Image: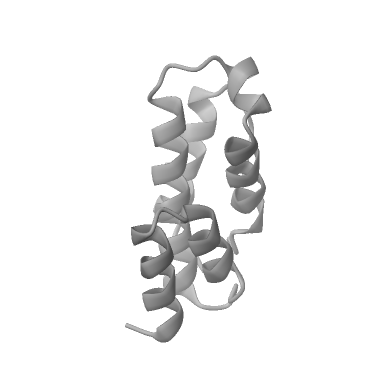
Length: 99
């Protein structure tokens, strides 16, 4: 495991998921970093959505908005179609479009 992945895991362990994702997204050509960022993004989105918040409420949540912005930064060229499908499923639940 590389330094960036280790640093991202440390951020995540310390409750700074947004920092972890941002760090991973800084290396868009690295497939493993994009996959790890995608996993953290999905985890963060599901944590927010699991509270049964309405789309209107979630849209005003700053962390949720940042996660959505990060989703747009995923390098689709290095992610497998199955990874992108996972992200699309979350957006489908929100009646939103993505990737």
